Image 1 (tube, rainbow, N blue to C red):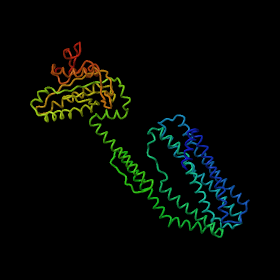
Image 2 (image 1 turned 60 degrees about the vertical axis):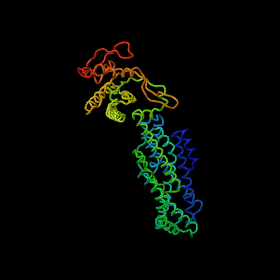
Image 3 (image 1 turned 135 degrees about the vertical axis):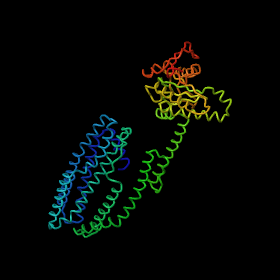
Image 4 (image 1 turned 180 degrees about the vertical axis):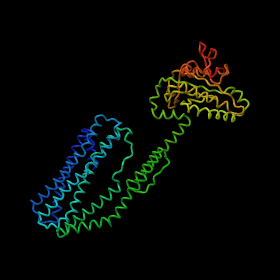
Length: 512
């Protein structure tokens, strides 16, 4: 349909819903039926000039009865699909959007009818042919001459009605696919390919045009019908067939390239590029697709770089929720891990700067994957140490248990390193912090702020006094499951910097 007409159809659907679709389908089919009922007898008169006005009215009435009968069958057939759509429109439930979308997509095919419908309508067409022969007082042996024309007439009716209904259901298909929010992103079952549509439409136009021309310029006899239709079919199969093949390939092959490229992009391959092989709208579409993929490629490059300097889980969280929701912060209960290298000052005094950096990178290369594996993320690297957080951005109720598991795994991995690698201390503390963006003037840092983080750093410092590699505060100890608590050994109360009262600390195992 013309774009303004389609905009009118979409606006009418928006106002009246599926009720509009029912009325539009009925009125559209009746309009086409009236045109067919008028054009069919007029075309027939090209080959039967002796038909009177009364004869033409009889043939027109029969043709209209055939079309109206088929409209009734089609209306009944599409009823269940329209009821499914009406039910979806009442709820607009994304969970049922896929079912509703499929119901709408099946409406044009439902109009084609079933075997019983086809047999009944075929009988009516046969009656039309018999009436045509009787009105002209032709011998019965000439009945078969009218069969190809009747079949062509009927197929043209089905095709035109099918494409009309296809256009009418487009607004509801668009509505469902948008409202479904990804729930209708299922593979589309292709029933009639674009190549098949072209192979059917173009030869049909050739045959109809050839037959009409034969009726206009010929001697207006039944023999002209057979000759015109036969020659038209021959031209459609041979001369026009080659042209149809070339036109079809010029359309379908670039589209197939686009489809394959889109499948690769959906699979994560953003290095794909579609060859631009056409100078028409398809070529423009290919260029637009390549520009889109280039944008995706640049976005993925930025995302990869972003994930290099910001923990991937944090990067995904920021991209998912946006900056605005992080501006005010959010209170979350977490477990903070503070890791630090012991004797770092003495180590730097006796080793070149490159070796110091290499040592830190080896340590962090060991610790970071363990932290990630336990559901935490590295908030920041602080000189010769790091701050890791468990419980954000992914909410884990057992964040204390995860943090302790990561600390023990890191301690074991560091102890297993050969050579004069420095030892480490790890402090754990749990509590409520504010999570969000800190910064200004376009420069922000996603981090956690709160006393729980400061205490974790103080607990790590206490490992130098107790001699333990891993220490955890009483807050973290209380959040551990009972079996795990039983494996913790209490340490003497120690004063922590910034705290007025001594703090109870615990270490894994019976002794430090």
